[in-house]
Amino acid sequence: MSRADTVPFSFYLVTNRRLCGGGRGLVDRLRLIAEGLPRRTLAVQVREKDLDSTELLTLVRDVIRAVKPFGVPVLVNDRADVAIAAGAAGVHLPANGMSAGSLRSVYGGMIGVSTHSAAELAGLKPGEADFATFGPVFDTPEKRAYGPPQGPDALSASVAQAGIPVFAIGGISSETAPLLKGSRVAGLAAISSVLTAKDPIRAVVSLLRLASARGC
Image (cartoon, rainbow, N blue to C red):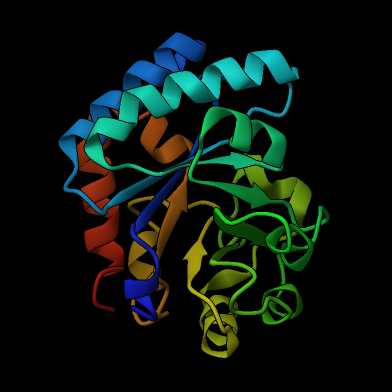
């Protein structure tokens, strides 16, 4: 794994409350996962783009209350204002959103950035973004809008050129995770493969083990 000591987690769980029956179901599931995993394993990105500012702020605060006792950092997708108001650990920027450098000039929290190509990833500078997601690595309905699957070879080549830690995202499952061995990623990011799992804690542990994200 590359630069693992610079990010305090190895699994980045992105939310979709609809997979959990709504906001309350999501919060309950996140609390369960956070409580069951070792510390410094999990971080959560609240990504609920259809909520208005008030609804999103309420949900983020609920998520923070649920997972903070277990040392889990919470980031908010795209909304620095909501992250600040809720006391979140950071902001996750979309590839076509505000630049990490612009946000860093006014924000001291953690900053993650989505990337969908080697060029986007290579353009991120240490000291501005703390980490990036790269994908989709494999095919998944949630990420088809961001282009065709990049594949594990493109992931490995891009990680080798990156100046910050990189998390693989898109189609990460028990079938695809073993294909990431040797990619030198800092960790994995996922949505449905964990949120819909019968045993989400076991799902996270299994995915990390299969990909050897801690020590590949």
